[in-house]
Image (tube, rainbow, N blue to C red; front, top):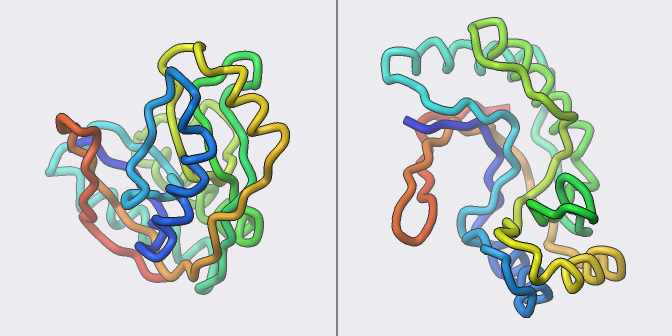
Length: 184
């Protein structure tokens, strides 16, 4: 299974994600994510064999407890890109309120999952919701203008849990399924 740990946005924010994506719809070379599957990734695990699921669940349970984060509100909005405006691979909406709590969860999950053999992240954690991936640079100018000039709001939601998710690539992009829920 191809797996990751995430906080899902509620269905009620899918329209807000889609509205922000619409601001970029004229940019060639962008491949948009499904607004119904919007989430904040806390840790990408990669391929996970079924015999390791229990070990990962125990590690994440410990991490969530160690983070000491109670349910909180998170607001999604504003725009950014990875790795830079000169070379855009990912376009995202950021997390403002709730970023500190998401970072604490990420750091605790990072400690526990690397302790059981998963690779550490190679970059700093930036809480975000991926809106699109740039397959080629044809629309880079438009994306750059929108990111620099606009700060749209997606909305606010209550974070109550972290989820272990599996991703299966289908003809219309990845499909996500929740394997386990970890309450805050």
